[in-house]
Image 1 (cartoon, rainbow, N blue to C red):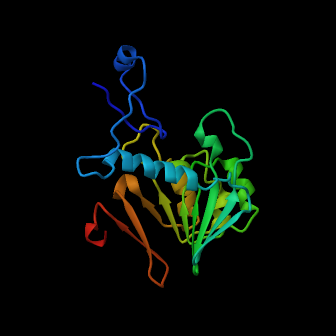
Image 2 (spheres, rainbow, N blue to C red; image 1 turned 90 degrees about the horizontal axis):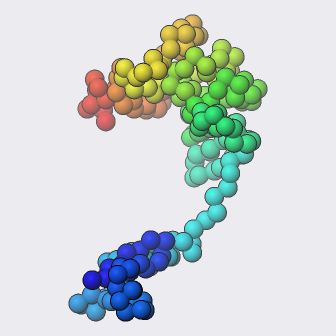
Image 3 (cartoon, rainbow, N blue to C red; image 1 turned 135 degrees about the vertical axis):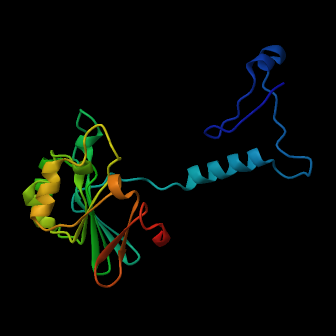
Length: 208
């Protein structure tokens, strides 16, 4: 018995039947009600998406993307792929919405942070680089961002020991309050007019 499924808009058939008949049988494209089957409908939608898809451009340093009332600023983008893992290829992106701003750093290294610190990176909230690794969050970068809140995303009891004590001490020395997912679970940040207010899912589930 033959079967078919959509993969990249191509129909596939059971090899055994092809060997028996010597030709490719045509699939039944309609159901008992005379309308295209769900699988055919899915294939048609995939093909329509393929034809209408937009080209994705590689992000570039100093690029700005405007979306309604928000602006996405590419502060620092990798110029070339570096061997050694994805950590070496992170970009630093600043999201501005109204009077508020958040700086996303991915796993940016200290070298990338120093380049970014030469630009306008001051933000209300900083997603602390590389889960709070000691290899990131250099003092010059933290001082340049001067956030009112730092958020560290790290798994509880992770084997890397993130966030590292040195980073926590740097943040504390600059008077930057910290919200941590390893201690508070999911973190929700709200701008309520006074500034960023954060909630912990572990302790404040009612706010989620």
